[in-house]
Image (cartoon, rainbow, N blue to C red; front, side):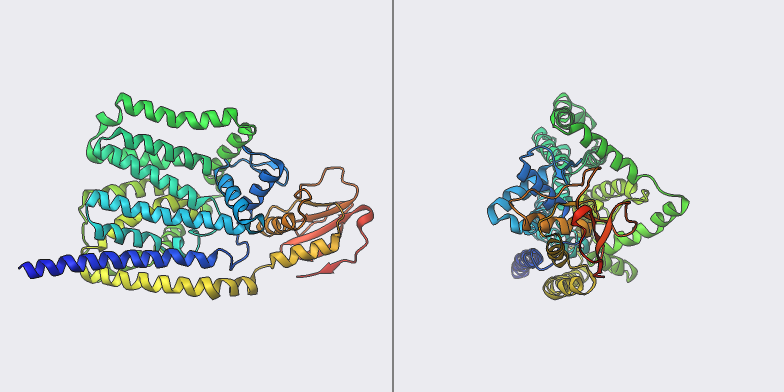
Length: 473
């Protein structure tokens, strides 16, 4: 009996170490995505804005093309600090590093929380591993230079701390949650208050903690949470612009073009969501179809996590303009559910571990070869376009109107190349002489096409127009 118990303890310890080792291997894979791939999607937005903020000395107001931008600046501040340390020529690396560290931090948060509520080290390590190997986290949005990974980290921290506050009746966790709430708001959006509010209400309902939630100390702390955005919009130099932009963005996500938009979202979005929860989500579905044992189906913590994820998922499922990366704050909650369902069933757990190991190996293949090869073959070559634009313009006045991802990436490269000259801005309405990086398509009156690139056209006006129209597509 004692030997059997000792064997189980040793196996549990070994499994825990192996899970953390796999977590570390998955986290290390982000190193190879920091520099191997050029700007992807709208990655250039935050590095570009950070450089403009730093150049012009705008500490509180994000700036893009010389115009105030409506997002809060916390991510910009972090990018600026890292870029000043490693050099502005590596500002994309800085932005991706912050995103990757936030993702790893979210995984550690999941592990810490799982260990606290279940009092099991093995489950803590397994939950962290499940999180960091989720498809969207490991392969794409977990390392891209968007604000979403950092926003997800602070959102997740707020939800988990609020959960603990209600469950353990500790006001101190509410205070920490409010700090995380404020950081999430300053990173991206007001939607953090919805994520947090739903989480706290679900936990309160499950634990019957209404008296604690509506105590005077709780009211006071949560009032501070609401004061932060009010003060920010009132005191920030471009607070009015930020407030209007943020509310317009939220409302815009709820609007569609017609019934087909809503029907498409209703049927397609769940399938997309399931795809981002592979491989463990697929293992759970397979286990259910094969009638393998699923553990902790009636665990109160699992039911609470399901409630938090389900209620928060509904607005994004029913909004035709929402995207998968907006769900990142919920991935940690879903990881708790998946880990709870899998960890106690040896057959299902082993299958999940095999698929997570395969996902980690596949990530290294993608990071070291597939991502760069795909970019080189199918994506516009941002740096080459930027170099050619500089060669064509030869120091003449240069402006930009293209705010699509290729235009932003080209502009970011040009801004760094022309230092210490000022970053590019939008042209004045009465521009008489100069070049403009514009969208492909219709040419404004008075302008001439100098060069056509994939995703970008270079136009000119006035005496600088001496070059011959060239096509680079």
